[in-house]
Amino acid sequence: MMKFIGALLFITTSSWIGFDLSKQLSRRTIQIRQLIQSIQLLETEMSYSQLTLQHTFQIISKKTDPPISLFYKKLAEDMEGIVTDFITVWDEAITYLQQSSDLKQRELEVLKQFGRNLGQHTFTEQQKHIVLTIHHLQHELKEANERRQQYEKMTKSLGVLIGILIVLLLI
Image (cartoon, rainbow, N blue to C red):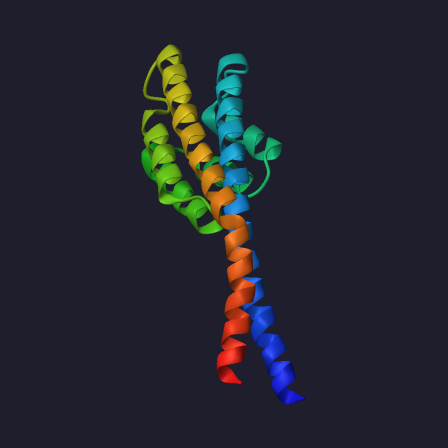
């Protein structure tokens, strides 16, 4: 009876790991989509409301879902008071986003580059940077979708099969 329970635990655990890896692939595509939408919101808020960046970040944090909303909330909180170096604030928020999301380094690099240009140019030039950033993120989204479609079922199956293999080897 103990062998059966142990075998069931091995299979369940490895299956759970496979399903978790599969979920990470799905969450990444969702988060890239949310990031694209948030940057589009940023452009809209900048062009129509012409509020400060801090207020714009607060508005976006309320209109998006976690972890993207937490990124903008952190930006808004870090911009309270006098900010002497916006790039440092932006980089700290990206580090926070990296820890709380399933985004890969490529998406975070696109965001870092976007932050370096934010507030440094005229509105027309910033719109060009926004379009370029969205284009890069859409490319990453396409690759993430392809990767998800390619590996999602495989990770689930491998989790179950590896569990069964370990049980068979131990018996």
